[in-house]
Image (cartoon, rainbow, N blue to C red; front, side, top):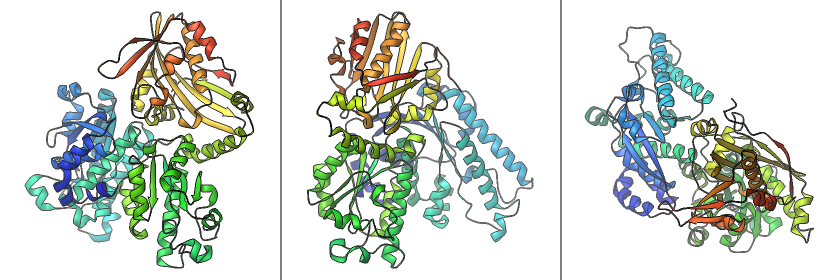
Length: 602
């Protein structure tokens, strides 16, 4: 993380961008995404910066850069070039330089604002109707000058009030509509400081809406949104304790004397880190501990009254004297997460270097100073939220219940007996407005049990589900410990007497529960109901889904051909009755099945 954080410095970025790009392009498994930029001002170098940050997040961008200050025309009028490009993402690159407001206007401010809202809405509706892709809309920074001082926030014609009003309008629209996201330029300008955000020389000479020093952070903020939309967020935080969650070594000071809380300046910095992690946990990040300590000594720091984070906020706690990379491997194994799913935080440079060497895909953040730590962590937006589901908010609970299941599992010598003892019940639904966000999230975030690793936007999924020949299954699992939420999704396309599994994912939280056979049995059921005689399955190998490389072979499918140019192998089953019988393991009951005959349930 340290290297990519350095790239937020404009001078360093200019020196290192080519080298960084070449290095990042060598990464395996990059997703190619088409990014269109509709420009209200010069984009120029920002494109290069955005490319570097997207590559860091695992996305290889292909850019379409619109003409200068033609964002409205290119969005609302026929645009064959953009249509042919077929964007996955459209960024509306405008700032307050493109607002109608100016100090010498004579019209009523309410009319300016109404016209502004009308223009933006027209752009959004046109883009949604034509391209069905992700839209990223900048909100607006304050003007550098207020003219009438503090009254500019209150008076109807005040520049501050005008920006506040248009930003509230944008936020309200985005919160009520899918597939459109805010790039918070207002925050970025406040963070940089308006005096440093603006550079009149850059605007007057080159029509850049911001100073050079602000460009990398602007690009990173856009990249973070795109990364999140296409499933690139981290899932877990693994943190040390001493000098990471509190100041001092607890084994030497004792729990009551560690620096944490309001008594000392350093303690307040660590308290803020606690609050930050707790907030992340409420929004889906799984917190874990990896610390070299005696267990009782280490955990006692979380038991003090001044600790915001408590023992039960953490899912897996490895507090012992083993090598940290070994403990991290065990944590990831217990969570069923891949190496690149976690952020590891530690103050010790030796431990950080060791983990980097042994687990190169795990993001390592060294805490050099508590007061600066959150600035670095927050800038890279590992946990950027674009869509939040009930499953996100309950993720810690799901993992804690998984730990309980693991304890129960130890009581059984026969694994099938253990599965039956869980009293698993499956509820199957089609895709509709109430579960769309979770379905898209599961398809985009799942890597290990994902046969094709195709990523979808909510709009793409909605349009796909409207096709009568496409059957989508969203499987929710409950057992005696509670609900696991929607844990598996499949996309089945019917064509004559053939069916094609165009997508199939399953959450890592429910591995080795036999649910892959439940879903395959449901797919067979659809085939039999519609008189399908041949079922086709597909598999594209990635660095993360090798776990399922032999699934079709082991369930009786025959390989139709060798891998195509895109790395996809095709498998065929010609005896669906037999396959259906093979999938009836009896480990889970299917209580309710609701599959639309076609169409999308709003």
